[in-house]
Amino acid sequence: MMKVVIVAILALATTLVSAYDPSPLQDFCVAINNTDSAVFVNGKFCKDPAMVTANDFFFPGLNIPGNTAASKLGSSVNLVNVDKLQGLNTLGISLARLDFAPYGLNPPHIHPRGTELLVVMEGTLLVGFVTSNPNKLFTKVLNKGDVFVFPIGLIHFQFNIGQTNAVAFAGLSSQNPGLITIANAVFGSNPPINPDVLAKAFQLDKNVVDYLQKQF
Image: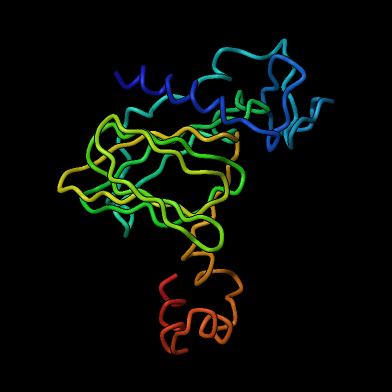
């Protein structure tokens, strides 16, 4: 069942591929991290096609639950992008497994280069995204088998509202969709944003801003 769902996600996500990842002009361009090849595509050097094997298109282990206990938020995301699966280079797609402890949260975040298509495998998730100004919220409670799409570049979240673990898989329309976690970016940037800026922007006491910045 899990294999069928993953294949379905990949098939659906391919319809979301856009010009953000250049369309390939060859069958594939397996990424390598050195400069031995003369071919350079989408930020990666292409492996000599004669040296490509089936393993370049293979990644094991998404059947293994993520360690949600290692996160203060009670969630774990295992993203398979071009850095982990070199055969994804130029194909404009990636895949993630999301695990949630009871009341675990994948906090508000953005994928600047990819739309996300999520399917719930186990549990119940409260999900949503916020549009650009005037910031309308679209939210839904998802159960096993439900699918929800998060448009590219919009703030979105997933929250396990159940008392049991939850599992979801997500296809993303980029080989490297990127990730900006809102709270981390605002309060945990390096170097930190001037507290006066944040205090005024969020209408908070500066002491509250100082406290929040120390959390990151």
